Length: 165
Image (cartoon, rainbow, N blue to C red; front, side, top):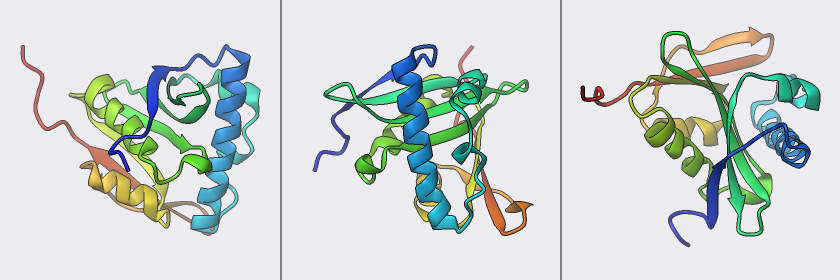
């Protein structure tokens, strides 16, 4: 199996109806799997409307298959302190375990925010996500519980070197 999936990355524009619908569908499918893994079906993104999704002040990066279909996406926001908060990293379940999440997150870390601190949270029991973040150099911080029955893990990745200049 190749080390990277046969996909190409490109910025997504949620003003495009087909793109927004694909992002919404894949997000729900991906979060439904996470809900099973963590035993909590109250993940806000599972109930997020298409309109609300489009209103989010996020940057969107998609991984597109050879046929142009969306295989997964990452979305993040710029923080006032110069850092980046990864809001969501979702992969179509038919693309699980094929390197799509690693490719998207790797691009964010090396191209979009190479010299900035990146933070993310995920369900503490979401072993695939926890493993991915730790493998890519994120350090686990304190777990927290925003709702009864839900334990979240926080992660931070600080830049390995400062930009020249």
